[in-house]
Length: 217
Image 1 (cartoon, rainbow, N blue to C red):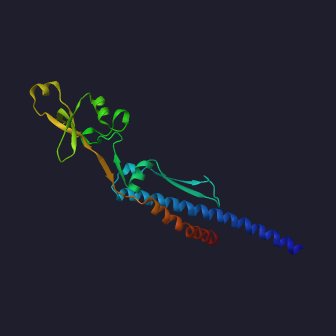
Image 2 (cartoon, one colour):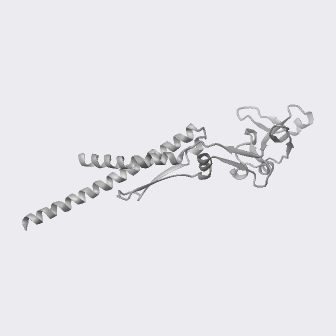
Image 3 (tube, rainbow, N blue to C red):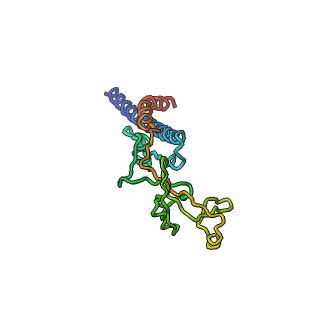
């Protein structure tokens, strides 16, 4: 009976230690895979030339938070899923009203009303200027702003001409603010599902590796 009691106590301690090691190993493996997937997806955005703002939309989180678990899970997501989906699947976008899509030029500025997306109507409200439609046969039509003058200094770009400039007519220009196209086609430039499959496949090996490290420590 003394032998049975000794074995029982030893097994319990061993199982407790193994469970703890498993929790640590699974959580560490999931953490590494989650970070790896997030890094890969950010690298894809950079390689595709889609800009740093879209890079920073990728996020990663481990659950349950703040504690190791055999059932640990990782989640990687983008705060701009619509944009990512377009470049993951490819898409052709058309105007919902069957007219033109208005693509802003650099002269339109970065933001519309209250930081919203730039639209022709919003640009007119913000600037107090009217846009003029310019049809171009065999090329994209334009919405232009008349009576504009180039800004001097580092800021650059164009601004509405002053009353004095309008009287003299010196330096006035008509500036394209929007390019009008019937549709825009986005080709596939990201492989989110492929990156996810890569890290899911690697996860078991990463967990076993972390488990072995825990035993050797």
